[in-house]
Length: 346
Length: 167
Image (tube, rainbow over all chains, first blue to last red; front, top):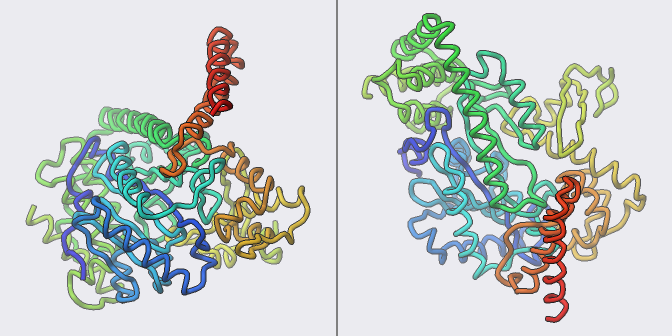
């Protein structure tokens, strides 16, 4: 059903791409006079779906987009969309009257009848908060002409959950921080970020553990702070974290160069030769090689190849590539096969 | 220590979570953690919902009347305090100052300072918003004992107020 190509925001590079995989921004919006999704009757959900779909169709930003009615999808289709972060995991299980509109390249999308009636989402490669915000805000302005959004002068955009009210804005960046994990400072950095009310979560794992040293940082305050200040603050805090990560990498190189080299080259050796890889191990190895590319040690593998692998080695993507349903063991073999062939080609 | 959620099993998992200025310690048994999806990042609604319930609940207990209903959608304050979800946009008015208190605890603030739909972008609304922003800045200037800046801000606010009152 969907493009077999990886999303463009994952492979384009972008500013600070050695440390930042991607930027993601979303706006939560609801239609005035309509009950919020989790309380709405089917007829109301359908009305929201039709109204929102019509508005999206007329929005210039959505010109080259595909509209996917979740009623017409299988659970497998939806799992693919969730692995690409285009829909929430909640939408995988509840699909009635849910929909997604996504622009080619997947930098801009809109979920209909998720927790809020509309969730507008923008992705960028690397660190590009301003750019991603501009894009999603433009779509918001375009929709404002045809939809009446629930809004109050006092509380701003009204959302189904009190945590999103105000701007409805969530700014996130996915960072790769092996240096800070290695020297143990990640704890202190996370505490510091939480102190300034940013949330830090591990990412890309199948479980709750942080796998592959990938961390998602996002804002949690949406009320009492303007969009531009939210973006500015986040940008400053993220750059601070990147500075710490760069210093950690420098001292790693100075103090343990040969150990580090050994770890990176072993990881690449395993990725190039292993026949069975579970996702946890694969992510750890990709993380090490990614560090090697960032430090200039590994030159024949590109960051974009590694970023692409992170998406494609997920369970449903592997099954999509092979065109068949695979059990866990078969997937582990498929994952190793995919990575070997991907590294041979690069 | 017993699990905070079922009150029966021993709490084997312990978390510290920060929502706004509030630091909450969570002690939970494995079964409850699994039931709430806390063992999997993919559906960890735990953090948001259960911590919010703590915040909402403690405010509503101070305020009493949990049976209040939103006139528009019928959602009770009690349901809001259990799930942290509002039923419709009118709930924000229906639950009055209790909502403002909850929002203050979550966000540290209960006043919107961002963009707004075009229908709200009248000069008067923009001026009011500007006044609010200047008032916040004035408060900070006074705290920092920057009286020169404070005097300047006070005059600017007074001018804007005159304009809003006239229109």
